[in-house]
Amino acid sequence: MTELGRPASAHAIPLPGPDGGALTLSWGAATDVGRRRDHNEDSYLVHAPFFVVADGMGGHLAGDRASDAVVRRLGDAVLGTFASREEIQAALVRATADIEKAAGGNAIGAGTTVTGVALIAANGAPAAMVFNVGDSRTYRIEDGAMRRVTIDHSVVQEMVDAGLLRAEDAESHPDSNVITRAVGFGEPPEPDFWTLPLRAGDRYIVCSDGLTKEIGDVGISRIAAKVPDPQALAERLVGDAIVAGGRDNVTVVVLRVDEAPDAQDIEDTLPRPVRA
Image (tube, rainbow, N blue to C red; front, side):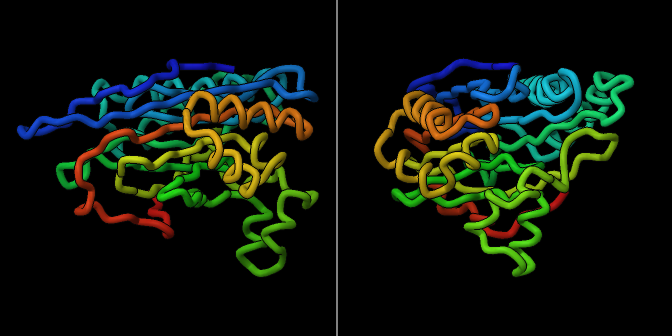
């Protein structure tokens, strides 16, 4: 388990360009091994421009190393405070090579999910680029309403999309842990990307499936409505997932937009992902 970055309140990020100004953000993060696992294979990164969670998979410590490789490669990918889609993709390719080395002779290989928010500059203004591989999730809370941004790369999501399974039954399905995409396992990474405007008051919740499988989207939304502070919300969500059963590692990153310039010229790409 790797934790990169620290919680921050009202952190001002200077904007690119001659007009000056700043983007002001607050963020928090929390993680727990849970009640049934003997070690934590999740990792997170909270340092501009990245707010990311990775959930590792593999044999003896391989998952831990896989999630570590992803957050470290992302952390090293950008020198400034704004990233690009190309830099994210390149970092995931480098992480894939790192994971292959770390897996060594592990027969089942190693891999990790990854999802999160990257700060980018779009049309001269800051924006959020959400990216995802696997079944960890990123949510956006706008005007008090929470919406899932990412689409799970999983067997049960494909069944839901095909009309073979109700969405409310997906988490309890026997194949709910089977994912169809990951970073690692000897395959090129295939992230989905979405570009969203950054608006004052918006919040983003980034989490491993140890949260979603315990309290679900409705539970996350209800708790978020009561807890505005990013660090307090991250800790509350992790704590409630443990109380609900804690069957897996649980990691949560929360990003809040405190102040942002006018984002009206940035197109919201939801709900369709743009594939690399």
